[in-house]
Length: 435
Image (cartoon, rainbow, N blue to C red):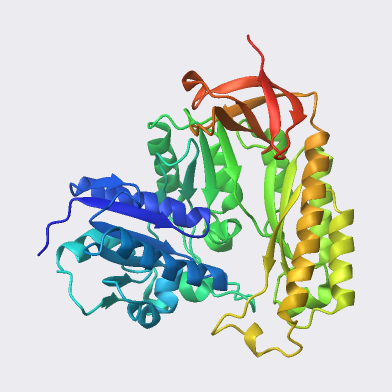
């Protein structure tokens, strides 16, 4: 057995992956490893993969090559969604030593310490149907905020998505266990928690313990000043959740990220989504009625099979008319083992890119308008620890990114800030108001 001393991580994809990487990183540190930057010549490289887009797959391959260049004798481990979906494909990448699926990734330290670096790549990958346990996770040290994993897996099987195949059925810990994890984060001095998962609105899977009950329980935790909801399906974003988080809660912030995917009911049905555009529109109206200054982000897919020019115009018009703050635009890419790959009327790549460009421009316009509506206001900002050429950044409760001259004493503190103007890079310039 080779004795390894330093471990470096690289995380692709969502906030859920970041929470899991951080938790796995702590297991290495508990085993006596030093956690270092990916480029700092570690003995062990851990790449936590995503497989939402084709680009994420390519990025994984690039990172393996990068790891080998940094340390040709380093041990390379691949975990995450790509590792669950295509273990043999990953194992064929030169330089990969071990591939762990969804059921095995949290035991990475034990697997590595039982192996030598050999020519043969080891695969530990159970069938996703066998993945039934929920492993809590949260991030610490990477950012001022902590990403808390409250749910995993998904039962929806949208036609474009591989996540149920990569992460299994929807599952979670109990509310009491989740509360204990949040308290553990609070003891670390973290002031903001972002609730994350694959389909967090499905917490409890419709039983007595559900997402609404969880939000009420979290709101009473001492030491945490803010809770932020990372993403929630529109059909699961109930009136009681909106009313509680925006009116009654002491700690939940006015910020929602809600996946739409298409503004065409025809395409929503083809995608096997569980709502119509009318339902989505009503959710936005309900939110804005409760708090007009709420930040709302929206996911949208362009170029889905069967998306005609008319369908895209319908989506563009729908989004343009919605009172939202920004978009996350995804260009549809074919994914093996999804229903969508069998659909006819494939949209040419060139047209997909053109439509993506248009929606990115719309997102810029929406975000600019939202920021402009907040100029001149006083907001409470939680500052991060990044020092970028003498500037530091923070976020208001409604997710406006603020920049101000860097000062060590501002890190992880709340300050009353005057929102002055929008800088050339689209970030709001803020002036700290002395108390």
